[in-house]
Length: 278
Ligand SMILES: [Zn+2]
Image (cartoon, rainbow, N blue to C red; front, side):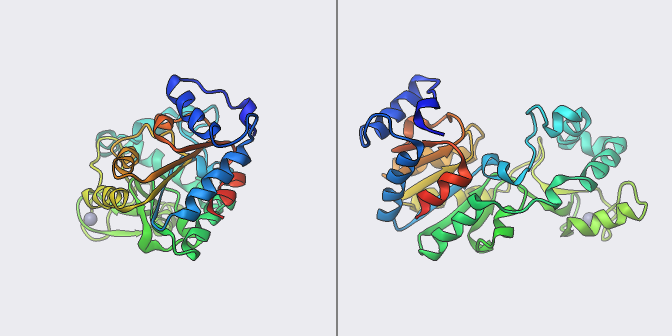
């Protein structure tokens, strides 16, 4: 995609566009913007990356509210995504387990966007990789687990709502395949759920703290595939900005924080992120 067909939708994103455009010739392509961002990465030593759903689109992870979205096709799944409903309604839980069984997530593989972030690690520039995604594809791509913060949890594990029991999701799904419609916790008999943060469920304070601390420590924040409208995680962008870090935003469309960016790159993440990370 070139900058010609990237239409700014708000004054905020126009302002961000101006910042980038002042540094390249008129008619610059998305690749030109990516090259400017690459220059900022070259100058940086502590890069914090925030990723959202957009980085997994090319791995065919379906979104929630789009035309093929999980919730569009199955409103019961949206209801089950609220903790109180999940706890109160056994029927919703049984349905949730059937949906988990068929999730396209289990067959999904990392794409060039996920793999590009390994390059930052090899260059010793990656400070922390904060992700809003629950698909586990950064782990699958080989990113250092110690640097990953999954602020919305992971669908690759199952957790008990009453005790500390956790296990790989596939262990619970095997029980479903063997006929248990709503497998309970082997330790305490409590309700099991994917280890994601549902609506109505608290975020893990340590994870948010790690994300914020990383934002305050970085010299470049690279936001990839997030509309930056989900808080508190999106707050890492203004936090990093306040400390004087450079801000690079790569996304398919305008984001809530384009006005804070030094460079906005708009287009295919799997094509452009490899350019940005060098
Ligand atoms: Zn338990």
